[in-house]
Structure formats: structure tokens, C-alpha cells
Length: 281
Image: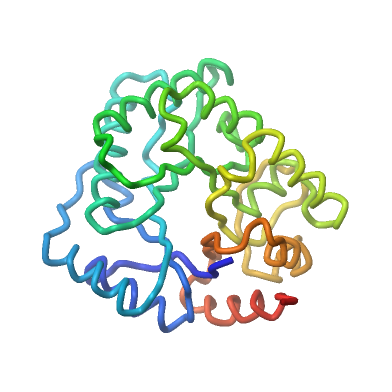
């Protein structure tokens, strides 16, 4: 895997590469817009050019943008749906402008309407987003698996499969697997046998060709808790062993895998070293 981290873009999006170098990241994930507002300042052509230049200079990539947490494509509320679609179209455009390969998003919450209707809404709105963003876009939209808290969709691999299958543009979609979310959702990646079964389940649902990126996070809560609470690498209930399974699985070679741990840039360098020490080849 290409090991990296979610880094800040304070001071301009291109500043992310300096932070990435400091923590020894080989790839990055960033927010390209304000996460707490629906409207965000545009990225200037000059800043986009500097981002692309720094990408080439550092060799850091492939890279991810993470969509706003305000986005909910599963909602039945028309106003929220409209805002979410518009934000995602803008997220795709920004990723294209910066040359970022992957846009990661959470499928959202059906808010009590049921899994089936929620999946239909997510798929239909992804179609609209892809069509509005334009077929010339090179950005792959990655559905992130979730812990399943509340009425959030995406905690079962079958739900990821069903979203992709219901979309008219499956070639523009992939999956991002979060280790914390996977364990919290009930997939036992903490043992060798559990890891094998989990990857078999994942393969059977979406195929490994669709698994294009990872978030590597430990967890504060136990197996099947359905609680999304990240912990620092080796500090949570997963420990180090499960990460060695992922890191040494040749099927995931070259995939970008970023940390999203609580201490962020203060701990990333140490955590990336811990992960690299697990590599056996």
C-alpha cells in the first residue's frame, strides 16, 4: 500500500504537501472545501497549479479528497438532497481541478425510511452528480463503508454492492474501506480467520477491483458496536495485528491508505512508522 494521512490545507490546498512530507506520507487525503458550510471559496487557478506542481515534485499520490460530512445523498428531504447534490458536484470539480484521483463520501442516512429507499436515492443522486460533473471527469467517486451508527447506510458490504448496481454509471464508482468502521460494523478483522472471511465477503459483494482505497484507523469500541470512534494506531481495540493483514495482502498493493486518527499530524509520523514496521516484504 501507499501509506499516508489526512492532512490540513490551512494556508491553501498546496500546503498539504509540506505537511505530508513532514509526516513521511506517501499519499494524502484532504478537504478541498469548508466542511461546515454549504458554500465555499473557489480554488484559484494559481493555487490549483501549485498543488499539481507540488504533487509532481514530491511524488506523493495517488490522493483522495473527502467530501463534506454535511452531504446526505440518502435523505428524503428535498432541500437537503439538493444541497448535497450541489456540494458533491462541486467536490468532483475541485478534485478534477487539483488532479486528485479519488473523492470519498459517506452514503448517508435514510433517517428511518428504510435501507431499500435509501439505497435507491443514493444511486439516483450519484447518477445526477456524475452527469452534472461531466463525463470528461477523471475523478473516481468512492463509497466509504460505515460503522452503521443510527440509520447510516453502507455498514454491510452488500449495501455498497446494491448502491453500485443501482447506479447507471458503475464505472465511475469504487469503494474505500475504513478499518475502524469495518470492525464496528461486525466484521472481525482482528483474527486471521476473521480477516479471510471479511475479505471473502468483500470480494463476493463488490469485487476487489472496486476496492480502490483505505482508511487505516484503530477503534475505541468493540466488534459490532456500530459506533464510529477512531483511535490512534495500536491504541485501540484492534491493536497492530489486523493492520499487518491488510498491509501484507498483495491484492491491495499500490492502493492509497490514509490515517484519520485523533491526534492527526502530531502522531502521524510515529503511526506511519509503526505500520511500515509491519511490512514483511
